[in-house]
Length: 256
Length: 277
Image 1 (cartoon, rainbow over the protein chains, first blue to last red):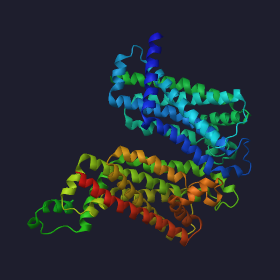
Image 2: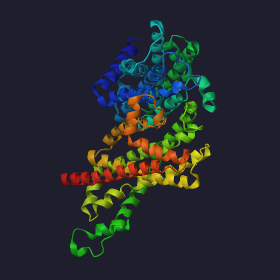
Image 3: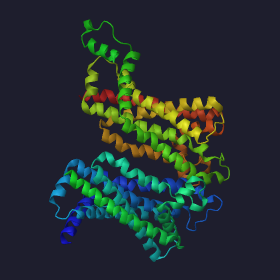
């Protein structure tokens, strides 16, 4: 266990450190969520006047939750890019040779993803407050929203690390991010689920990301919904994708 | 590559240049090379082609409640959104063009080409041949997908053809912008780094809602000063309102202005870049 923790701590610290000292890595993960917040909350605020759109705290808060959770997911995805880069540069192979407990490598990258997102989450929240976001939830409910973000970040990081370890090239970037991007946008991004129609409503209804986003919006509004469904979705995602990441690591080990 | 070969054979010696290829032939030769290279990169072509279609499919449904907003110009949100893939595809083309040219600069090919009697204009415009063909292909695909998904043209068949022409001019304009970035920065990585900024211009425009329905004042002002809004509105007008001369004039005007300014600045940048070597 000590060996596992020492590897996880070292890899996690390296990931966070590299992000902090490399603006090219840090800035996109901060700028993109801010940009989405501006584009959605600013440009689409008229959507709130669609009949039957009811969200107490307002459209900025409605979009803030999506952007907050999206930034969590992309914090994980961007860490996967780093894993792929480590394989391309040869660092990951040296790491595999040196690590006394290799599963600690996955844990380290996941910790790094969480540390990286923590910075982005603070920036996005400050931007949301400046943009006039209303918060109707209490402290416990807001903590629940943060917990959803942490869950989203871990799930995405495990997916991205696992796939990066299977593919072991930076060119895997599009393959890593596209499913996450599509899953997020197949959730009710612009209007509540009840206002979606046609195929997108059918898909959204069974999309696990929908439960998490709806739960987050409910918590910010102080009217919790879909808490159990979102918790179960994230828990199942964590279990399945932990196994997936472990298999990715095994694949990288076999490749040598 | 015969014109290019002619130009290379001609060399720097006046007596060895009996039949110099015309500007058109030189441009065509460079464009042919550019087209071959672009079309060979099938893996790189898929993402720029498919991504706008994915967003079109998702947002076309997810934002359809917006048609219930009073004064929204159409009852089918896809009619409104169809302009977006064309401009988004053109933005991706700017990166393809920029990265390809940057690679030529980084590998030294551009400098070797400059040693031949090829004219600067041929080098500049010819390099955009591949991205231009890609833009045309993309536009046809987007149009067919739009029609298949139920988009109807208020301007009829003629309008669809004008939309294709306008989208190709827009693609050419953005390709020339990509070329300018490559000449200015000389690195593919730098060109890719600029891409998010170009992408921002798309989202800070009337891409998702008409300008008169954008509620946030500063956003509406930015969209009004953003030329991308007029490119989108020109394309959109052919689908939604039929023949709208003002919208088309503005769209063609802005596209041609971007093209002219980019090519003009590229010409300057090329002189500076080659003078440095």
